Length: 85
Image (tube, rainbow, N blue to C red; front, side):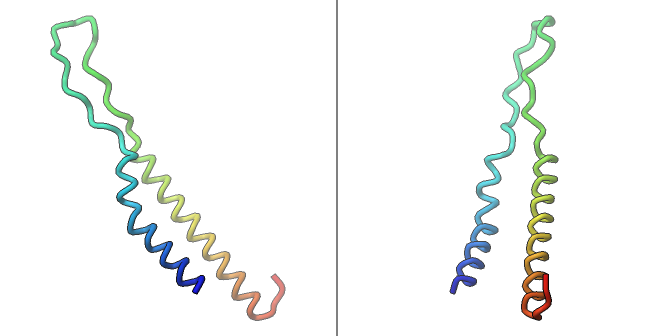
């Protein structure tokens, strides 16, 4: 029963994750300035470019999680066979 609940929790996280990630992205840039002031040097700054960093961070998290699952399963197999870890 515990294993079933863990799997259901994991699947629920995977299904709900896209709904919560969308709040992490930077805001779109505001409307352009009216211009006419050559001293100011341009419009408003654009939002933070965090898209590439998020992709890398998520990929590293998935890789680390996969490694941890691999280690846990490997240790479980060696313990079932009776060999010392």
